[in-house]
Amino acid sequence: MSLPKIFFKFSISSSLLLGFALGAPAQADDERRGPTPKPCDSYRIDAKRSLRLCTLQPHLKINEDCAQGPAKKLTCLAFKATQKASLFGIDEVDTAGGKDPGSPICKKLAGHAVIATDDERNQEALCLFNDKSAIVMSALYYFARLNDESP
Amino acid sequence: MRGRYAMLFAMPGLWFAMQTFAGDCDDVFLDMPPDGAMSHVVTRAQDGLGMCYASAASQLVDAWRFSHGAKNYYHQTSDLAAAVSYAAAAGNPDIDGGQPCNVANHIKEKGSCDSQMVNEQYVNAEHGGRNYLEYTRLLKTYYTRYHEAMGSWYMAGLKPATEKMDKVQGDLAACLSATGFSTGMIPTPDKIRALLADSNPMAYLKGLLTHLCTGSNMSYPTFGECVTDVSTYTSPSKIRKIIDERLTSNSSQPLGISYCSGMLKKGRGFRGVHRGWALRFSDTLAGCGEHASILMGRTKNKLTGKCQYLIRNSWGKDCSNYASKDWKCEDGRGNIWVDADELTENIFQVQHLE
Image (tube, rainbow over all chains, first blue to last red; front, side, top):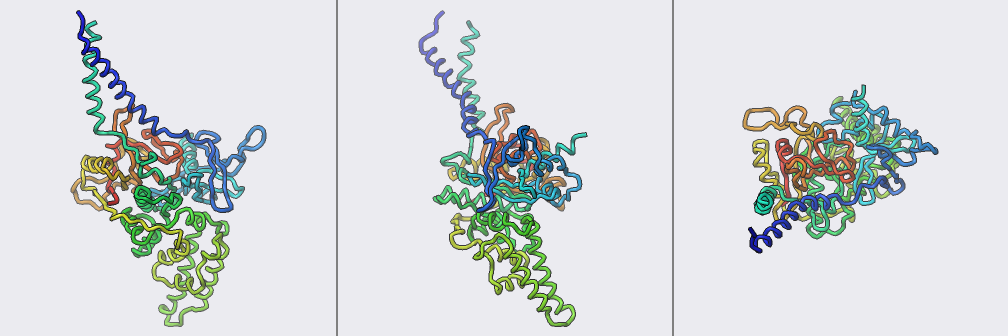
């Protein structure tokens, strides 16, 4: 039993189309992926002040010079803030609606909020501390949840 | 052998079925360069201010500007300046909460003020160790003190406490001088007195910001109008239809959405909008967390097969804010993918520019 040539041509073209159809979502995903997020970003606060923040641990985007000494020990106030961060005692008004949930935690820990911009002018809310260390606002919310959930 | 032939016969049908099914959720990425309307619109951070509605409005305006010929991508609309200016014009005592279209239409009328300049000169300026939220409260206390001094005349049948008023004016001038504001940005003494005497506290704050929003710091967009499409009386399926039609229309502009931020924290199954025609006091349920963002994309999730929408939120680029593991956040961009059907259940308004 042999099949006509036209059948094979049709099957081959169908297979190619199927491959294209299956490949299409993967292509779209690649298209969206874009450049991998950089481990470090430079942020401008104003004409005189800028900071370089790096992701030193998962969810910990903090000023890179917070890591001191050969052991790269984290000693700055911004890091200490992640250990103290908590949602307990935060006024509901400060987290109502669409407000950044990290902001009231920064205030509670005696930090100062600024809205900084990266090299592409994207904005990031940062929490600054008296020793000039800084952390991204959302990291404070992440660690507050983590601290509150841990026994 | 027969099985292999059957598979070959089945392929065209399978391909056809996939294409038909995928047609309901074709990819739309409005943030993709070079032509995406959102490709030049930066990620916003609203921090602790309740001005998500102004962030959404500013991004709608900027997307429209950049996809209609504006080439100065450095000028991104200041959500704070827009929120304060609108609140002053509307007689609102605060900037917490509002409607995106009200602000977008206000920007069209009054102009768009440059965001970086406002953030650097006002938000991030060093105000004697205070952050800008505290600084704004401090400015309002000067206003309150001034009005108390003015009011004593009416209360006690006495002369206005002009000495006290002069003192407040002098204190405010000194406070402004002590900030990181450049000299040209500080109002003159006469202007300060006029601002303090204004009956609306937001008009007074706007007056202080107005010194930043002039000349080359301004841009004047020329869109038609911002229109709100749906309400809580619109069914989720109808909302989804409206969104899909607008996302795939020729103009391909992003949409503003007013929705419950609770779904970003709680994930699938969260419901925060009071649907239907029953009599009620509020459109949203407790825990909704009324919020506004931008909707700027659509794709089918390869793992779940569900259609998802892409939200551009205003909580900065980092993804650590998103408590729910149901949603995929694109780290470094401030974007988050959520199921289309879950989002539309939690939407109570959709806005677009015409």
